[in-house]
Image (cartoon, rainbow, N blue to C red; front, side, top):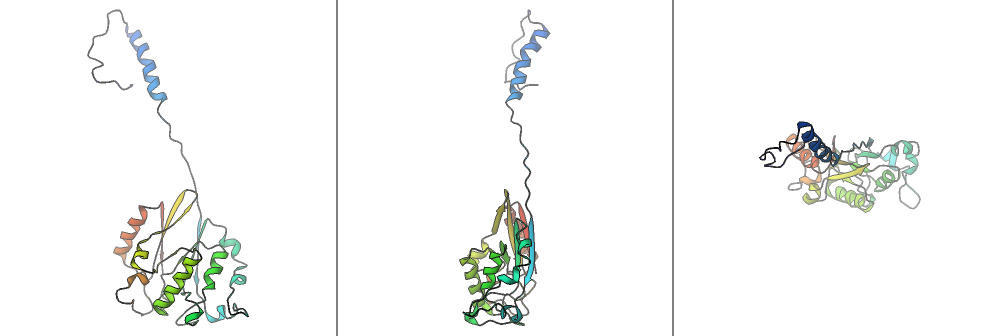
Length: 231
């Protein structure tokens, strides 16, 4: 039945009006009310996501990448995988070693520090975001982390799992593809026995189930899909 306003039934129908006539009068009103009801259109959209790693830079990886001018070029090493990295709408890489740069001295196992050019190659070959909460995050301390984060920011590469400050840590990293918003969180089981500097928990996200639950709920408020990376 069409909706009726309050009091519409208070008056008695005229004697001359038959039931058929009453139905005839009601019909247009009923049709009109339904004609203006919008019909929602269903929209289906999809997006693909891929993940690679660990990107673990031993000396046997960065020494061959060294150029005569002292810089590093890792792009040739990606030539066979670049087509795969670019196939998905979003590609995430777990950057296991901090790319703190040669300024503080490059190093290999067991305490890693990698050239910043690793980040340049990842971006050039199709990676959209890096997770950096790993057991090697604190290998070379706060300086290596901050150097790496400064470079990620300079090339416009989103990162998650280690941060410049507590304020930076509160910012949920999101990427949008095909009208779908993805958020990214990253945590590690530990840092090879190296303690997190006092008062600086933002330097690396450690696995804490209560905290993860809270941060997932926050991420759900700003995204359609929450991607959690655990190392």
